[in-house]
Image (cartoon, rainbow, N blue to C red; front, side, top):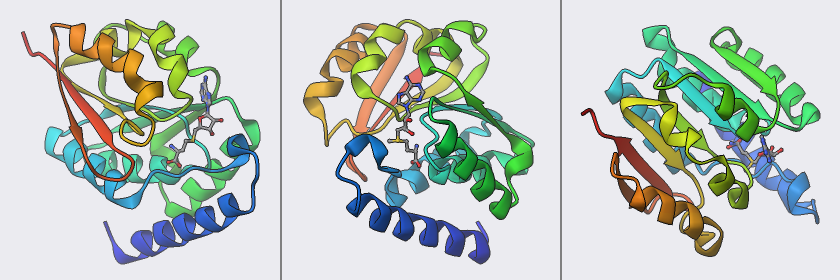
Length: 196
Ligand SMILES: C[S@@+](CC[C@H](N)C(=O)[O-])C[C@H]1O[C@@H](n2cnc3c(N)ncnc32)[C@H](O)[C@@H]1O
């Protein structure tokens, strides 16, 4: 990542913290991914040579920029989904400022509905960063859409253990997934789908 992009991301993150501090309603906050968790995803995505990344929960595009920067060198694409039109307008502007808008599709839609319509095995990386209690209702699509060797990443597994517990039970019961929790940011669950 070049210095100019890192500076833009640092400014976005600082601005997000300040903005969120002034919002009493949690749902109005940007709730950007922590930079160390974003850097972890970037490293893993680049190590995989991932080209097809799906993100549920765009907010203002902070994490989307990290994901797009990770796939851009191999000509990859990010589909980022959010229900909030205003947030996605901000995301579009931030991605354009980062010079990464061409490799991202922003879609205003429910994450579960989008996952249900994606084809089997077409996704290298799926990143879940929206309302955690909804995830179990999306099962089995989060694992169905992953290609063999694909990665499921879920944020907030250490900050909100009760909310993610039902999803973790599904993941641990799924024989094709091997999962671990990395204590960066608010806790990233990483689960890889078996190759065979
Ligand atoms: C934690 S924020 C995402 C933060 C973002 N990934 C980042 O790091 O900048 C959660 C987002 O999920 C969106 N969201 C909530 N429920 C959703 C759903 N069912 N489908 C898609 N997006 C949803 C919210 O509008 C909100 O913008």
